[in-house]
Length: 123
Length: 106
Image (cartoon, rainbow over all chains, first blue to last red):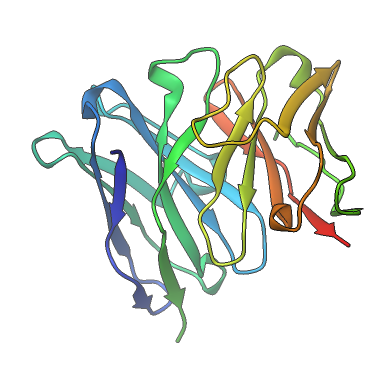
């Protein structure tokens, strides 16, 4: 079965960087992309960016363009999200989700989600 | 940036039909999807326009679209359906979520 397993919670100080991993299993990694979505506690869902499992191409939401980097390791079917220059308003749960955009164009949906990683930014 | 607008809250009595709307300027040209999120849980894909429901999603959940407004309809609403619901679509390369609707089953 498809699983998206993330690394554990992190506590960071403002200005620091954080790198979260997401290991995908149960499907052919290169056939799908993976998107990252965050949720500030008590608020809605916000898309962060996407990486192709096929060729590593990335797209980032404009508001994160300068601070986020997505990478992948196909050999371990793991995707990484690094967020830099952390601020207190980056405190949120960060989810990775399998993204259908490579297989179901023009539809795009997220059919498998991780449990999420809580990143807390506080001085 | 592209915006999807949902009502913050919707209330429904058990056994009745709940409708949650999602509006956006370019929604008419896309295939919106809907997610359910219960407290402390990850979002779950419910349905997308013109696409079959994922395995395990009850037939009570259906989606439709008219012009620039998409609607999630939950028939015979049950207490277990109380949750937050989000619409989602994409424009060029960017993904957009609606602000979410809290469904209360009274």
